[in-house]
Length: 273
Image (tube, rainbow, N blue to C red):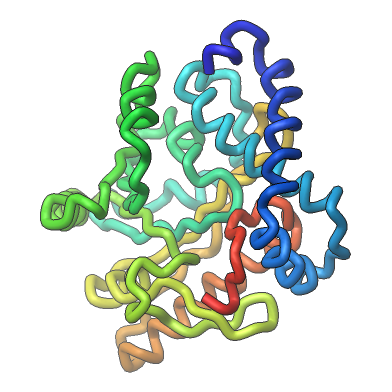
């Protein structure tokens, strides 16, 4: 980030291309995994396309740090924001996130809204990176907070407190935290597994679910996509209700993946995991 301060956004972006090229060359396993993904979204594989895909990922990580230095430089397109913000102030919701687009920039997208979202994370960042983030002049917006699942009981209590206040809790859907806690879905015309936890929590607490995706549409430009509200059907047996909710979310996610295939950041054999 010191380089960014000296040469600016455009200069840093130029350097990122060389970083992306290096990783595109050395990540052989990831390259092979993406061939399967590209086939599913109807894209012909080429090294150039994979390089561009890696570059999109690199830019998303770069934007994550830039947003903490200069959050106001980002232009956020939020056409359906009212649909997301209109809710009973005393009712929590489960916000479904995925590794599509730049979910880490959610706090930038909502920083001007009087709306609290608690994002559950399971990231174990290197200590040096954590300390660097703390040193930046801009911290997370008071509208978006994080709950680190690695803190165990503390994280559970924070989530319960958020529900008591009627605040939203955001959970990743597309990666399994516990290999035994999954729900089967049809995604890109193939059977796979999504994280069961957000749908089970929603069912147990009678909470609606809404999908949110933050897509990078250009330099310093992002667009928010919102799913329709996924309601809970308590008249349906729990297992079936969870499956229905998960597949509704999978359909929403699939539509955006097809529009922005280079912003799918699961660089492994997704359908085998």
